[in-house]
Image (tube, rainbow, N blue to C red; front, top):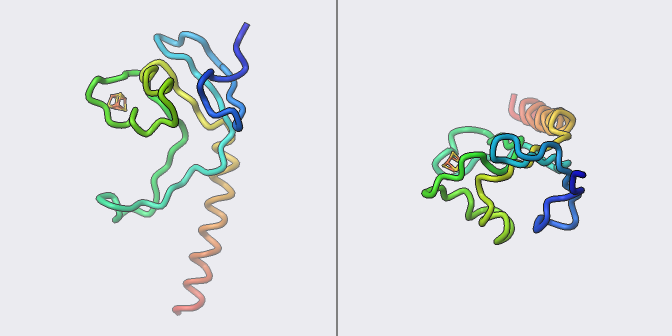
Length: 111
Ligand code: SF4
């Protein structure tokens, strides 16, 4: 039977196992609070980055992304899990609506 959450993952956000051993990867689903992140640094010419999932199926030994996972278990298992944001479509619609409103206000103020 599927485990209800990724062991070692944040206890406060329920994570459900969707598919065990999809290739070498376990696939999990989780609801997220956001999808868009304001772009900064060397990608600052873009407005946002879009992050509909976390994790990776490859687990390259030189990968720096594993260092940004929330705990040691997830770093150790890098390449063996993917967690997609199950509510991506509704979150994206809300975030785009919010940004359209901000843009509209700026256009009204500056034109
Ligand atoms: S393990 Fe890292 S470098 Fe390799 S494909 Fe995945 S994200 Fe890219």
